[in-house]
Each structure stands twice: as structure tokens, then as C-alpha cells.
Amino acid sequence: QVPDWDEYITQVRLNPNTDMDVRLLRAGEELVFPVRIGIPPHDDPLERYRMGYLGIGENIPVMIQSVEEGSPAESAGLQPEDLVVGIGGERLYGGWRANAEAIMESIKASAGAPLELLVDRDGTPVHLTVSPAEKEDGAWIGVVLTLERQLIRYDPGNALLASLQRCRRETGLLFTSLRKLVTFKLSFRSMSGPIDIYKFSEQAARAGAQVYLGLMAFISLNLGIFNLLPIPVLDGGHVFVLLIEGILRRDLTMQVKERIMVVGFIFLVTLMGVVISFDIMKHFEQ
Image 1 (cartoon, rainbow, N blue to C red):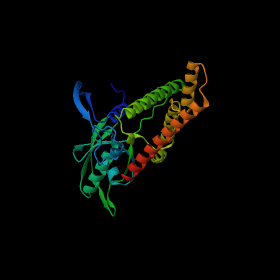
Image 2 (cartoon, rainbow, N blue to C red; image 1 turned 135 degrees about the horizontal axis):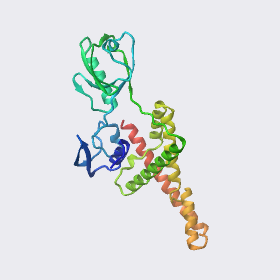
Image 3 (spheres, rainbow, N blue to C red; image 1 turned 30 degrees about the vertical axis):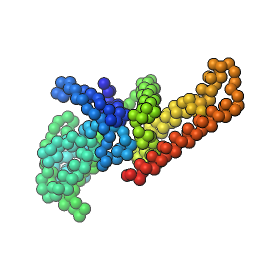
Image 4 (tube, one colour; image 1 turned 60 degrees about the horizontal axis):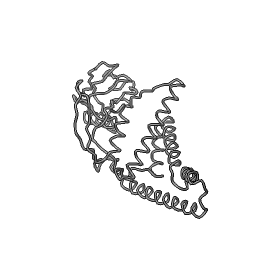
């Protein structure tokens, strides 16, 4: 059982080309569907990462952030914080971007003609009719669309507990990913190099300080854990050598230590080369 949508996405992306049973609730009844997790289609931006794909999206309604004074939207009765859940007699069931694009396309196609909207206003469905006005750059109703956000606040004690739980979850995710990479159940294309990190950092910075700091913490945690792996040259490799010397109750010769370090160095350089190569390939596949 997955506790939230993020965990569902994680389980799907880590298991490409795998048969699984998906359990879901429909009208209070639990249903089981055997599915095979594939990889994203060629027109999906995630296809170049070769991660798992099921084709199930989260339904995220579009929220009205503001309504321009004197606009067709104001005349129709639209209000800030209304959630647009249907347009033109059709319900919206896609992700936020897909829903927003569907709304904009419907507005453009209805210039000068009435357009039916179904909004959720504080849990109450409200049917409205708006007539988009024609402008030089297309049809217009005078609203700013945004994503509905839910802010969860913690007291210091619960914040510490939540952060520890998040660290444990991310640590488990890292080890699961490494295991699947070593057993070739997950493509090395799923790893991110400097180009991907730059892109993700730019996107996070545009999303706000909270998202950006979260990404930085995620990268720092992953680097810290990776540094503790028993790979020569890394800190974890030094600890591993000390453990071996403790078991043998004698120091390894300098020649042996140098050879171990050379092997570790070659491994890291090879790994970096593979990751950066895939990073460049993914960049040109966009």
C-alpha cells in the first residue's frame, strides 16, 4: 500500500518492464488490476530516462488566482480560489498542465460564443457561463490560473520527526535505485549528471525558495550517503579498509592500499564518464 501519490510515482518509475498488481478503490470497492509497467512513449519528456511508466495521472484541478475587474470572467461570476473542474460540458481529469491547456484551448475556440464552466467553490459545484472576448492575440476572459497548494505546518518536534522520516525514505530510495542499477533492472539513463542537476536547479529556483532548498537538501543527502559507500577513494572506502585491517589485526601494505585506491579511482572516473555521457545524450534528445 502506498501512502501518497509521490510514493506511487516512485514505485512505478523504479520498476520499468515489470508485472505488478495495482489495487485501487472505486466507489468504495477494492479492485485489483494486473498491469505491466512499461517506459514512457517517445513524445513524453521522461522517455529519455527509461524509467517506469503506467499512464495513470493525478487529477489536479486548476485554481483561479485572480479575476480582472470588468472582464468577461467577472461578469460570469468567477471568483478567486474557484477550482475549474469542467469546461464545455466535459469534466477535467488530467494533471494541472493538461487541464490548464484544455481550458485555454476551449477559451480560444469559443471567442464570442458562450462557454460553460463547472467550478468547485468551497466544495459546492457551481455552473457558470462565460463569453470570451476577442482580442488581437486571441480570446480572453480575464483570469490568472494557478495551482492549488496545500501548506502543511509543523511544530518544532513534529518538524524534526517529519524530516527524519523523509531522510529515511530518501535513503531507502537511493539504496533501492543502486540495487536496481547494479542488477540492470534500471537504466543508467535514469541517473542525473551536471546537466540534469543544472536544469532541475533552475526549475526549482523558479518554483520558489522552498522547492529550491528542498532540492539542495535532497542532493546533499544523496552525496553524503554515496560518500559513505565502501568504494575506495571515498570516505566509506577508507572506513572499509580500516575494518579489514581491524579484522586482520595488521596494517595493509602501502602497495596494497595504493592498488585499492587506483581501482576505486578508475571505478569513479568510469561511472562519471557514463553518467555524463548519458546526460549529454538526454540533452540532445529533447
